[in-house]
Length: 380
Image 1 (cartoon, rainbow, N blue to C red):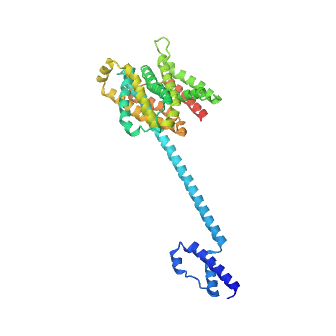
Image 2 (image 1 turned 180 degrees about the vertical axis):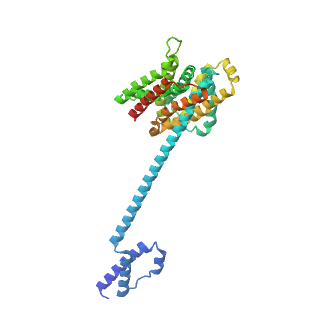
Image 3 (image 1 turned 90 degrees about the vertical axis):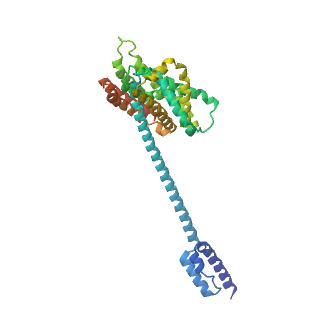
């Protein structure tokens, strides 16, 4: 055989061996059936034809391999994006579901407070509610109190402020207010929270008050005046005190919501809920008197049902859901609860407490909810 033929044969064997290793190595059937090629011209030509027929040239092989990898990469990316989209949709649905449940619970809480106020003083109601709630928080603490990081000393003043606003300030003002204000009116006035949040953000976060927000504030003031008009009998003592106390409640809600958000992100919603509840309850203990024991022992069955609903559902479960929503910035902006809570309270008050529904409540409540919608939209 000439040198030229030998070189050609050597090159062909090398090429065929490379193709065989690349494709046949992963195929047991071809590995078994494809025998080594003999060094003669006929076998070499047949093997070459077979190899090129099955696999093509080396450039085509590399191109097809690259295209396959690219297609697999695109498919993986597409699947990843699809999974992220499904997860986001699932999270949004869960957020709406939690908001709906929370709206129902907190809407009926105004009715339960009004009911319990018939038997307990505002101070004793606040004490009993939070003592029972603290027992509930203590029971779930071993399972849920798992902060993301150790509590830092510099965050303690903020946590104490949240606790004071969340427990004594909010609940004492609301309980005193509902001695004279109906559950529906109290719920409508408390829904001013987002407007106060927007105002606080202007001062604390240096955000500008836009035209939409300014209009929302003006409309909110108008709605508040209409709602409180039946109570504003200047000839009676303290007739304006009830609505003003509810406004303090709304301001307390807005302030602790703004202050809590950084700590919720840092330590987790469950940890802030339990810490704030226990610290807030401790600040109420100086208000305990001998009258508390007498009032609790004489509480009726309906009174206990109201207190237990307020303690376990509205406080323990409600605040766990509330702080969890604060941790989700995209969900916490949803103010559905501010629209549904007053409606639930009005319906519950009519059915359970035989409260009346005046034209002031309907018109003032509608105007107030419009202002809340404007304020919320201006922030988002």
